Length: 389
Image 1 (cartoon, rainbow, N blue to C red):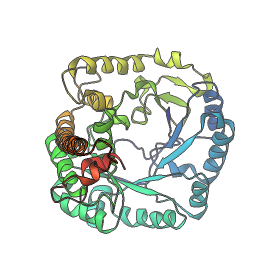
Image 2: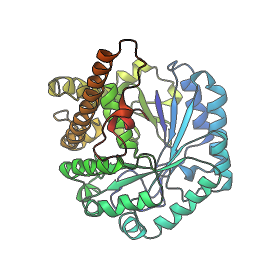
Image 3: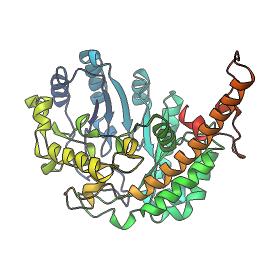
Image 4: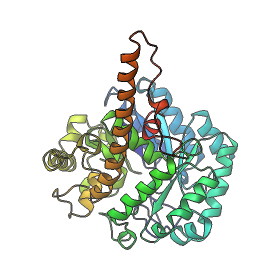
């Protein structure tokens, strides 16, 4: 189970394409956190990952996190809680870094590339503030990776951006700029699906020589998904019955992307709704309808088991909140999945051919064939290496 805690929708940054933060927002109280803990004690008896998201979650302050992490870890220990946080790092300080290290919290941040390009998209001063927070986090041994959002502007500089992350040994995850249900602020920056697909193909080609130097999390997950025939991140799984988000005032939503949208509110932590009650809400029924639509619309697609039609929010954002299409980046997903599948089948075919040849020569052999013996066509790594990382 994945529970996303959104302590505030406020954010001090002013990213040009952002639709998920507000200038002024309520900040979650310790009392609300206590209600979250009480609700989850008997909600579902399965391991849970808590992700602190926003807005900018560090606006909640040190005292909030000291209280929250202690409560979650001690009162929900039977759920084996794990943690993550997504922050711009502007407010990271020594105390917070030490606290997050105590709980071994991986940190996700956002950076769109070199300073000039990043600040053009995210606002003047963003780059320096984020890098200062990054230095503090790394000083205390925190694992930090970055989301790089590609817009229809920055896609023209993809080589420069990737070179920046490579030269600085910064781990990254790629996000395409997307339309929003909330407003049209990001529409003019939205990345065309074909451009997104070509970006992923370019990055895969580069990554096959660099997988021991940086992590490109999208490709790690996608290669693993094709190999295991199941998705591993929320975009490519049926998230509608295992992911929940809690807004600053304790309202419950299906995902952080729906926070502060009344039509997608499914409960409140103070009422301690059961799983069955949440699944019986209008919003969750809509997401279940999307799942059934994918089962039918994508039934002939070979990638259905590890794509699942992409993100339902993305689909609803371009269809006036009605279920009538899959994620608009379907074209991009097919492009990268097709390429990974093609490369993986080539490598698997070679391995089995070598295995057959070895068996014919010596029945009592020690199996020393496999992926490490495959020709790599000039690349340092194969997609199988990435899948098995």
